[in-house]
Image (cartoon, rainbow, N blue to C red; front, top):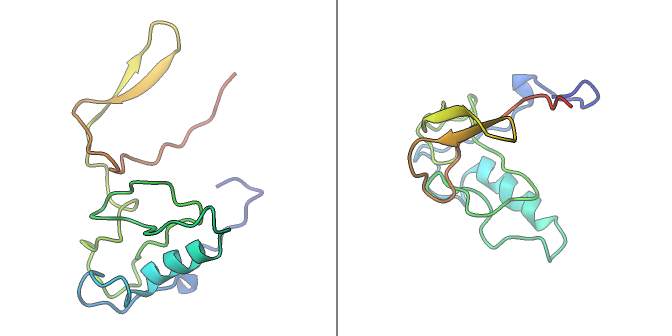
Length: 125
């Protein structure tokens, strides 16, 4: 996060679900409902039919954002609505390109919609 963007990092601020089925039923999970409700607030041309993850994969961008389950939720860490917070699962390789500097690539095929990792860096010019 940038200094000019305020983030509330207080864990008591987090919304949490009371699911006992690892959030299989999206209609009962409070976290899934936040994703669905924020999607409904978008202009009709930007709303998605099914925003959020489908079997831990994201097949289209969700402009309104995704509310993942978190440490305060009753569901297990294997919940289908916990993706970005999980560790890296795909092997990546840093490599030097011929004309463009450094790059990142996978060593294996990646299924469509899979989350790779959060890339954070500073652009140096």
